[in-house]
Length: 171
Image (cartoon, rainbow, N blue to C red; front, side, top):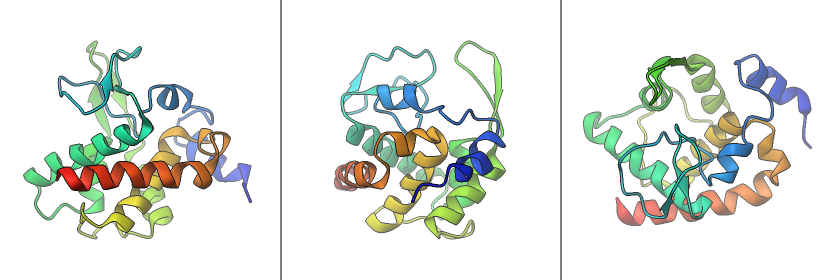
């Protein structure tokens, strides 16, 4: 059963509005991959100046897995902590040059708790179950209550799995 206090504990206290995910869902980019010059499979023109857009949500998840592969090339024994700190660094710069901050410590805590993957665990991108649990938690953190508004696990688990499987095939 959905507990509305769940998102108040994590999303609102982390400086994210509780319904922050509608744009990410509209862009089929629930992991909020930042806009790049990469020619992702399924990439479409984005209405956002900061985040990618995809033709399907599964292609958004596939891009997330491929993006993590580039991290792993730099950090062969990448842990969950290293992954989250690279994905959502505490400080960054938007495409327009303005600075932003992320609640990175809370993001890591949330993903570790929800995925049951410890921060010091080495990430195996080809482990479908591990990545499903991590991407599920990341999606919940990135889009907040929109996760349940969109259909929760009943909707997202299948879509995440399809994206992970496509990404694993391309690793």
